[in-house]
Image (tube, rainbow over all chains, first blue to last red; front, side, top):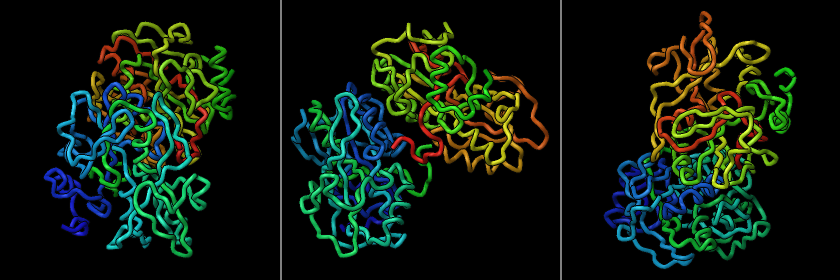
Length: 266
Length: 266
């Protein structure tokens, strides 16, 4: 089963593969045209503060959907979906420590869990490719996206605070303006970049990614950084919230929302 | 003191007038270029459900800012502001009943109050005027905007449910496409209209507004309806929430956020 077999799959198809345990890998390059989502599941007692955190930090945490407490179905983003089974892999944090990376969280689900689906920049990768911007992880290339804990501080909300996680796409210098102009159109997928150029000024060493792998920059390429939906995982660690369950980085929940829809939430 | 004296005022200036009790009237046509906001203040125990309601109903309830519990300062939308004093007039609802319409709510403020600032369509009125679209309540005209409880049902969230309130601008038929295209650019001010044409199909009788006054439509004019931030007041009534404090219809809290900024929240 190859990633490229599912480029033209629907979001529902990819969710079904994950639910059956037939897909446990990363989801970039799959179900092109559908919004992919970061997951963050918190106890209801923390839901307001976490939602405040997202509202105050729309670049790393653009809200696609929020479930009612105890309801595992994101009814507006994926009415046939189930947040307990439909991401390929999960991370379970307890008191700020990663304790497990299971393929399903059905056994951990509680009546007071609230799930947040936050847009992911994989959602606009196909649009960038279609516009002639070649990306290391798309279109049969074997590269990976790398992500970093930056020194940009998020706007705190209650107990939630911490640095912004960013990911980096290497962009030919002549296409940097175009890549900004395209990604700005997708605020629900992190929107435009948060930084361009010198990685050290945002506390990043390209040779030492926190997620993904290091690939040296090609000549005439600019490192362009976007806010990343892994940010809540770092926030979970720093806030020592008793429990937070998330997707595993790059292993996304694929929604039914269409990237071509200019206002998918209304 | 005339409304037109404050067309070019800043948001901070209008807030200051309200705080001193020097302005107690409606705020349309004032501080042009600044986002005006609907207010909804709920006890912290209801804050998550109300925020869910707003997230699920972004047309009537576009979130500009949410305060920390007990903090009367909307720090992102108006750092020098105070939600207890800076709207010209308030409505106090208890168990779903309107019990008071005071000029300040300082005496009612609690440590567990959370204030929501929701964008208002007054924010794009000046942009419509600048584009040659004459409005009855702008530019020295003596008209008023009218608002109606429609039969469009909001997406419920927990205890919050109810119909959408809409307001109507009479638009010359030849300018309807233009008015859609302009207002769509301002999702934080309710965005594009929710209905055009036959009022009865959304349960509205133009001759009987719930807020504002009836003015017969001019010939060759189309009634165009936008979602309205008074919606939470109807929701408060229907949900019988023990306490909700709002602005009085059309008496808005003026923020520091600029209409010309394409992404004022980032």
